[in-house]
Image (cartoon, rainbow, N blue to C red):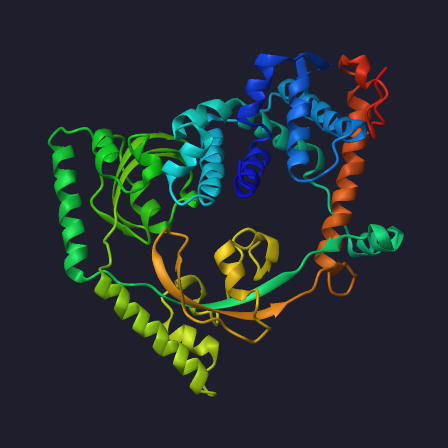
Length: 450
């Protein structure tokens, strides 16, 4: 496996805390090394997580494996308590989480086909393989939320935490950047849009006349992930869908096929399969108008003109030019400032940037901007953009003035850890817990195993 492939594999394994290698290991050699109530922990589970650490260059000695085992003991204890407390995870929640993780993982590849080729599984096979692991993880998360959900830290507690931590143990804040952008998307011609709408209307009419929506999605939909499942998206809430799609989809009756819906992704027709409370399962067929070479040349000319305006007009700021010319609605009216979807603020950790963006801004100083470059938008379309580096912080040890949020988060995590520790000490007397003699000498932080 290439180094890049290994990094992606680690990323996926971290999301689901398992890998295809785990099932292979079990065929070769395995044994039960711990029991928590009715739950068991297998040697292969510890070895697999140790392998993931090793692939990241971390130590994987006895102490590290003990830490892995203690984490698994806590998870199994949570599962046992979740059953006792009658906590449940619905099929809709599991499907939604699987879709979220696969969407995130899919972004690491050029296409769905390449992702499937890399993993050696189709999307439905991946979902089937990981469904039970994801269900358990959601139950553990729900149990953790029940234990620590109401925990908060006051500013005074944050300060006390900061003052109690030795300087060499303070949180390390990696380099972060703030970025702004001007985006010009090639706009398909009205004739191309009409051609796509007409073709989608023909497909819709064939479905209304009795053709299978699923088979049509399999043949024609340009959403390659859902197409392989006959257009099925899985159970989702309104908030998980773009507003234009949700506004139409959630008004449908079961089996009903919508009129054509336009979203930032293209043109859709939608069918409601089933509704369960706030969750609904839909099929859709997506067709995208395709910009021509002439459309791309026109967009390239436009972005070049904007670039020259930035260079030659002192009175027109980058933010004003973004408002005047950018086609990215999320940043256009915010002076072009990009928002990190993972955090909701404008700061991006350098290590979390995609490679194209990192390469674009790596050599820039704050206040400088890149030359125009072709890139792929979050909706999968090609567009041109200019990126400005607004600010860059150097990696540093957190201090209370500049990094209050990071220290607050660390203080909160410590408080949660203490509460979980007390919960474990209370609960381990209520369940049968045993660990294999090979791990009897583990220096567990919280568990006290006889």
